[in-house]
Image (tube, rainbow, N blue to C red; front, side, top):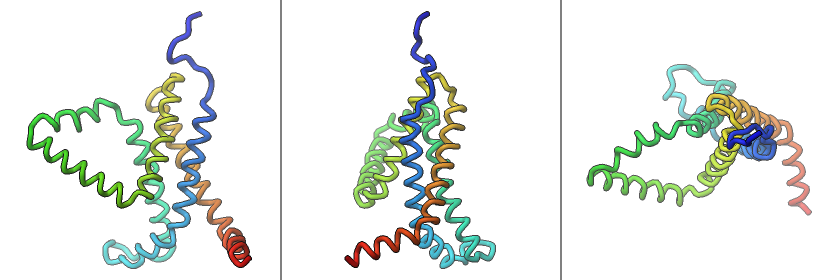
Amino acid sequence: MTASRTQDYGFPWISLGLFCLAYGVFGWLVGEMIPAWQAWLLGHQTWFFWPIDQAIALKMAWGFGGGLVLLLMVVLVAPLRIMQLLFGTWLRSDAKAFTSVLAWAFAAVLIICWLEQFVRFFVLLSAGILCHLDLQIRGYRVWQVFLILSGMGLGSFALGGYLFSQFQIEIAQFWSIFQAA
């Protein structure tokens, strides 16, 4: 029996564990940011075509976080041919190459200015790439990888947010005791 490069060696528990941990922590961090997002949504009610109350703003804020997770999953499974179409033909003329250099320089400045947010995004992206490669090596198809990563990413995100909402009061009490000492 010969071994192929895509032979099934079982489920990649370690990489998926790291993936779930990263997205769970992201859910926890989003849980910390929800009051600020909620206040922003309530402060900008005139931008929307419907009245927004506290409950709708809360659902919109959590929906935004979940949408970010799904967007990352779509980026992770985008075929390389689509990436080549987007970026490969762009650099064929000098004007487009110059525009690309300016755009990448601007992106580098934004990354440096918002390094903390970029590091969080990079950790999520790295965990997703690790799982994506691990699942593909084990012979899973692209749509299966998308479903597995989307389900586990959204589930971990929701679990992290739920745990934050459950333990928020206990953690605040713990830190107040710890800081008073």
